[in-house]
Amino acid sequence: MTGTTSGIDPDAAAPRELYRDPVYDGATDPTVVRDAEGGWWMFYTQRRATHPDPGPDVAWVHGSRIGVARGDDGLRWTYAGTLEPTGHGLALDASGPPGVVDATHWAPEVIHDGTRWRMYLTVIDGIPTRWEGHPRRIVEYVSDDLSTWARRGALALSSDRVIDAAVARCPDGRWRLWCKDEAADSVTAVAVSDDLGTWRADGVAIGGRPHEGPFAFELGGSWWMLTDEWRGMAVHRSDDAVSWQRQGGADAVILGESGPPREGVQIGRRGSVVVCGDTARLYCFTHPWWNGSDLADSDERAHRRSAVHVARLRVEDGVLRCER
Image (cartoon, rainbow, N blue to C red; front, side):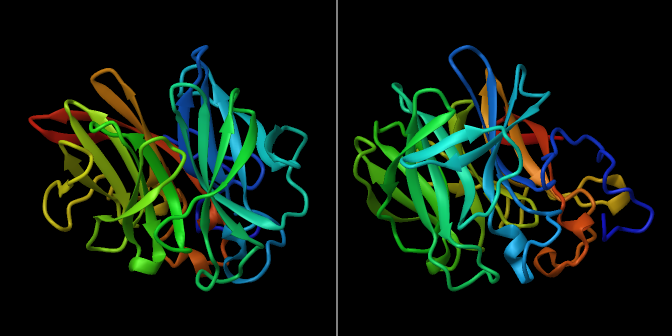
């Protein structure tokens, strides 16, 4: 592999990593769910971190499929393939690396609505070489088995620059979808639905400092939302999943630690939470061999590589605590 950080073997396992994508070593944005039989499924953005010729500039971040891994306990994972387009949706394909792609798939959100599975997928046409100037939309799919997904269509949300959906049923019985709205200075917008059939934009849920990757969950008698500020995750608390208050001061984050590249543990980035009784697991990703440089412009594939990590969450005296 070209591009290394001094004294580091980027092919080696990073300390405490949980999972690395075996195709392009670019597993990001993990979403983890459990099926009716107790099996664990991880859906993630398969960035093309080690692709030999991904294209110029930030093309390596685009042109991605959704990777899938499976396991029995949520701690040991086996690669299962990618979700590949079909005539009517997506289907799990384990045949090998994806071929020519004409769209970018990012940041899947997967929920069970009580009857079937639903996926809310960020879709971008083509393989952009720049961050800005390209519409992003959130498209809904449905499935009965987590392997074959039928396309329902794009959602009408707050703008045509929305990514990173998170969906949950809230205490008032209504469904809410939170997402990053890049047209609104990259804050968290929210939409509301009574039946998951139609959505109504409902303003800004989390404002302030730009961020992405919202994820909402209930733990310890409160609702919590995590947002990725690219320097760790901000924590927000709510009693009703409608009005949110930041935990700590304006600069407070969890998983904000960043050590020398040789230690392989860097700041935690966008992820999802699985509640396990009184505690929860936070699945997130890092760039283990990152040296603090601008990842988008980095020519070193070692810096682009990413790994999924897991951290433990618990509520203590009304405060969400996080332990790597």
